[in-house]
Length: 454
Image (cartoon, rainbow, N blue to C red):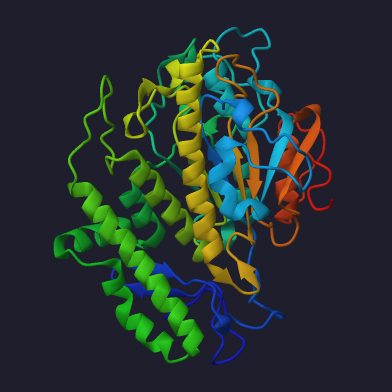
């Protein structure tokens, strides 16, 4: 067993301890043996004190807002139909109304609302209209965080998704495909493509020598856990019974994901009407999303990274949803023209996506960490850069913020902000709660009030 930081005693384990095997390295979940509240590692977060994390989840084509927005404000609000799947974690989320992505608007550039919606969502910057290589947007909030705290973890950030997207070509009214498929930008000219294959995400989280390690694992058909088993034996002797139980549960969850990925690879593609199934795995969309959610939980639980983005589907996606009796394309339905039948189908798609968010939040909330849960020590933003797909407007965006932010957020509320308040003000507020001092991001004008008080 090795560690990147020294421990305080022979029985204390460093927060960034890794278990090693042939070509793999596994971080550990938070354990009691990682020290008391006042013990500090040299170049990491306080020993025994959970770090703060942030993740951003994006869904395309806006929402059916009549069934998204709570009628009441403050603490005593009822969940509208689309948000009902979140009932189990209602006390750990905020519904945020009134925020605007101004830089997703045309500002003289004509069509292309979908491309601008995703590219401006985390950057607060106007995308340069081009379908060539001279793309330009802005620094995204996740990468602003990664640049400041990324060196404290194995991965500075993790960018994932469930739908392939081209990094070139014209995808929306003269805008490069990169704009409608990429949410994370390291700089104004450097988009970060997302990984859509759960197996490759898993390898990235746990392989210390990807090429050689992957070849050996595939050749010998061994689990990653097989490689770290010997290293973990010496560790277990130093742990309390409670820590050993938590370690066993962690290993079990890792193995479960391995098995599910293996099963998913063997399943035949699903045949759906007028839709080419992506070549990535797994074939079922819900299985794909939930595997990615499980990997997000593992990434935060092991402190492999503290910053993630997850694009559930590309902006403007016309994916059909036959498994919830919606064989029509999502984008086509979003231009519903106020037809009740189409609005009902949009509501079903919106609710399906909310169920996936509920799955992630409940998984995070089930992981105990110190005096709280993984969700208590995280900030999970979820939403879209479009208000209503039929209107293509970018004000009063559908947005949720879940998690306690290590005690810096007062959840269980519906907050409404003044019209035209930049959504970038939310991102600056989140950065500040990561102990990152950032006065401005994109078109931000300050921070959001009342996030931690009634």
